[in-house]
Amino acid sequence: MKNKLAKLKYLPNKFEIIEPGDHVICAVSNKKVYLQNLNYWNVELQEAYFSYKEAQLKREKENK
Image (cartoon, rainbow, N blue to C red; front, top):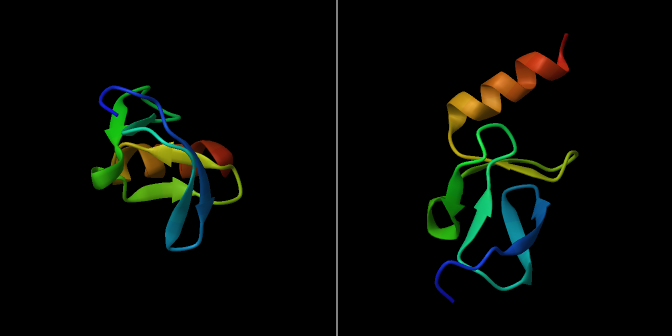
């Protein structure tokens, strides 16, 4: 399943694959995040982030 967008359900400490694929899109930077590299997401917002930098930017924006 190369170059197919996955649909995930983000849970605490893991995610569940709803629709198979090999990547998701970062909610902040719109960068492609391959599932094997996916480490940052928000369970409440059901969003994925490319890295800790994007996750931090989102947190700062939400806290304003």
